[in-house]
Image (cartoon, rainbow, N blue to C red; front, side, top):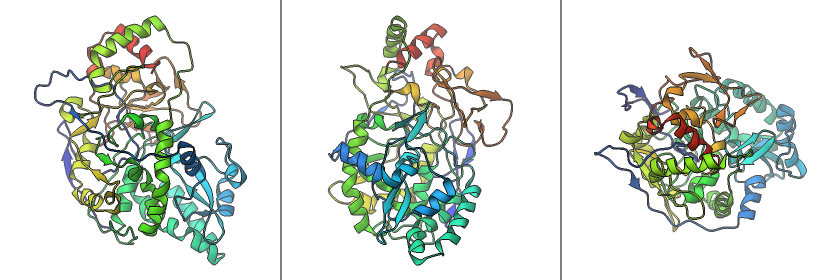
Length: 471
């Protein structure tokens, strides 16, 4: 493997070994104020790019039944190894027997194979109901050894027939290559961005053909992220936490195809569907807060929000407007490891900006920034945990940094939501205790910064939380 290490310094002066991450679908869920009092830097406006149009219904169909990967697990092996999943999507046929994070498709050998899909990261079962577009807050990238054992079993299974071998060869080769490089330190954070960077290192930028040997020099390590809510994308002029995804969003959305893509002929065929997928994603709306809201208190919170937060996060309602601002690290002061790694991973930036994805009439480009995007807050009540790395369990703690636990854990098997403080019910710990405990002292996992709510009174913070329930 051709990977190297380097160090960057975060805003607290600590030196960290870091990595470049291509963040596929993520946003900083926070409450930054425009009037920061910092005379040196100001938030920077991100201009819009023309986006492809499409058919949202067709996009949903392709997302939940389409063959955007051409290699997958033989259906009989998948059901044997995993059992039958619950049919939250109401799909028919063999798709009814696999979880929402997979599609059953027919390959060129007329064999039914199971492929992983975007909904592994971008959907979540929340209190018994599947919410498409919500980050999977229970995702687990901590135990790659367990997955390796399944892959070893699959390797034996595929040898039972030439057709099964052909069906899974490409995906199995990719997973065996990247899995050791995408493991996270705690459960509940995402490493899909790391996956994209590693895949790029093994693909020719022009032809997209696979190389068993890495062709890019990339730093080692995984910086955690928390996948964004898809329904925010309709307001955004750029993708990813530092807003460096410019141009055609559908080019970024389809990059999971790099798991098994053969060449640019296949990429163009998959791309032909992703204008529809983008249309579907942009049609999504957040679920409404399910309980009564104190309207009088919420109105007080609106006034505080508009005085303190709207400059970066925008206004809401029929006349609402979102400013699309990149907030410099010197202002936001949150863990800087992600955007610094994005800036310094020049080999990947060069790879992408000369790749197939950056060509044609609907080109995409990576333009790294020195900070993080202040996101829209539509449906923010349900998008815990918070900050770009998922280090803060509740909005109450986002608004009051003194409440942020250094070590905390939540129940991943039977998760409970805190509808008063808006976030996951959690328990604090006095020290790290395995990978189900979030450790904010780790590089990239810091819960510091975004101190704008600290200047509010307890009553004002309570009012703002009530207002956020209405968004």
